[in-house]
Length: 320
Ligand SMILES: NC(=O)c1ccc[n+]([C@@H]2O[C@H](COP(=O)([O-])OP(=O)(O)OC[C@H]3O[C@@H](n4cnc5c(N)ncnc54)[C@H](OP(=O)(O)O)[C@@H]3O)[C@@H](O)[C@H]2O)c1
Image 1 (spheres, rainbow, N blue to C red):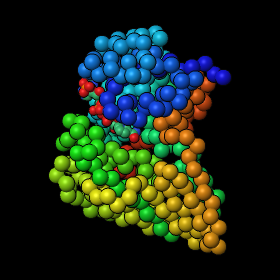
Image 2 (image 1 turned 90 degrees about the horizontal axis):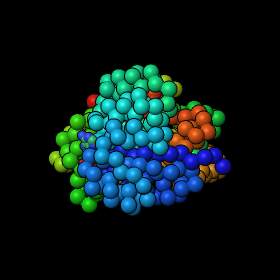
Image 3 (image 1 turned 180 degrees about the vertical axis):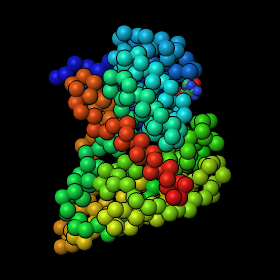
Image 4 (image 1 turned 60 degrees about the horizontal axis):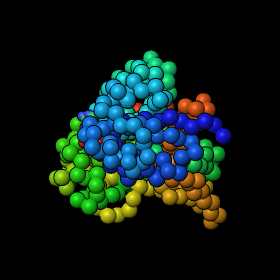
């Protein structure tokens, strides 16, 4: 059994509480949460009590100066994170940071170029990238199991309303990052799509703000053309209860579908193959971070990959 990763947490808001805590509990044999910090200290203290973290630092600088911390998870509003990523790398800490890399593609390019000057690992936590069945979808395509690709459909539907905790975070209202929820959430699906079929060579789209609280855009409908010749569509809507994230790829020999819960291949003869994720995506994400930092595993996803996911989402919301 490898030794445990000594992890510090920068930001103790909603994502650490709702999404990371179960993963940290499942990974107690792999990760020691040694310290945390948050702009509002009282929230860090509450989180530390709930997560069993022994030290709460007043500031990020204090946490980065703590020799017990060898790696950090950064969970901050999207536009504020890059500066902390560079501070942490400069302090010699391995970094995992929330997605997307930065507030827009230009800022993400600058960040990725600056971060390349430092040795410690730097990963972006696009959690679908750590799900085994996302790689299975890409393998089916690469192995020719679908034949020649014809169409690609992507749908990303969620009702983002008062009932959702994320709706109430002030930085998501009139956000400093490009594309609001459409981009913030869409990078996950963009990653799965790009791993399977690459970037579209052409996009032409429409966008709308139908629910004013979800500024600047809550709906997009985009046509895509891929290098293979396949045509596709991407529809996102954050104010209608159709269905959650879904990808469907159709080829001459079969159709593959992907959701966060399952991947399925149905061939022309009707044979069905399914693949399910081996674990919760956040457990996969943090397990992989420990493997990279402690055991020197090759990162499954590079900041350049996730920059590509952001760049695709930015093209889609711009419609070109
Ligand atoms: N992977 C996923 O599926 C997923 C899902 C949800 C969110 N996320 C990502 O997680 C990150 C955090 O989102 P969240 O929903 O947890 O937001 P949140 O609850 O608002 O948490 C943000 C944290 O950052 C702190 N903060 C705010 N402005 C700051 C500033 N200018 N400087 C330093 N700290 C600041 C806040 O401190 P205070 O306590 O003082 O306000 C808060 O603790 C985002 O990057 C988001 O995209 C990822």
